[in-house]
Length: 351
Image 1 (cartoon, rainbow, N blue to C red):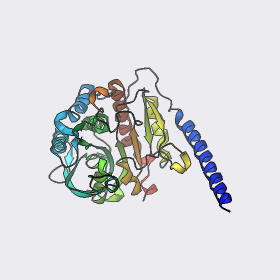
Image 2 (image 1 turned 120 degrees about the vertical axis):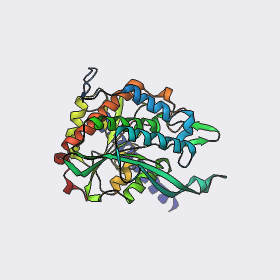
Image 3 (image 1 turned 60 degrees about the vertical axis):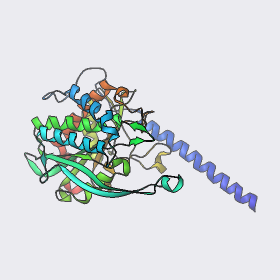
Image 4 (image 1 turned 180 degrees about the vertical axis):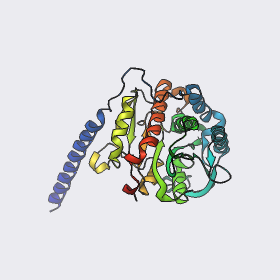
């Protein structure tokens, strides 16, 4: 009897292994081909306000510099990053919801590793986390909101080593500010919110706090465009996750891809029981709480690289030309979402 049970277990494990292997290959094949794009031609879109690439790169360089000490939530370096984002929001003319851009919140982080590793706490309180939120009111549909987000926190200093977080996620913040600069001149049809979230590295805490205390009615929140890790890829490719949940956005993404030199690949938004070893990024960053609330999202990010969550995630290791092209593509994407939102994502499709 024991041998039969062991045999049944072995058969089940073999079947599971075969299924996961096949699922992985199918998913890799499905996401292998990027959307058709402009190739090597310099056909950058949205020419009304050229991208200020020098400012874009300087924002990444500044936020990932040693003086910001890795921007860990609750630290002086994190507060310095808050001051930086606040000043940029103000210079771009973003309006706050209330007296200030800052939306303080508190949370307690529970670490499973704290149960397993000596000297590591299971519970850590963060009493002074802060999101920074500003917006441009829409000129035609001010009651309908698009949220463009990127987290500004990172890992700080661990065991005496600085984790600069250039790609993760100074790059996302810099791209968000570039989009805000474009909308400061080309005012949006819909209200566009720019959210610099804190506490992402501790479990998407800033996005959770924002969704728990929205500064406008939930029914008016139409879409989240979230950016996390945009500047480090040696293959000129970036992923867009979320179109599986909102397939009506695929034609818009295809239009944007045709005007970009970046290889845009759709994927990482299917459950892993369907995709094997291909990761599901549905809850990988701050778009997760939006998705949980039924809000359509598009998440833009590169695949993991050797510098991910490492002290080597420095400004010197980003791909500067690639990042500039990604930022230009994102400006185009944000502009098209604003222009086409009413036809692409009807209010009644999400609850």
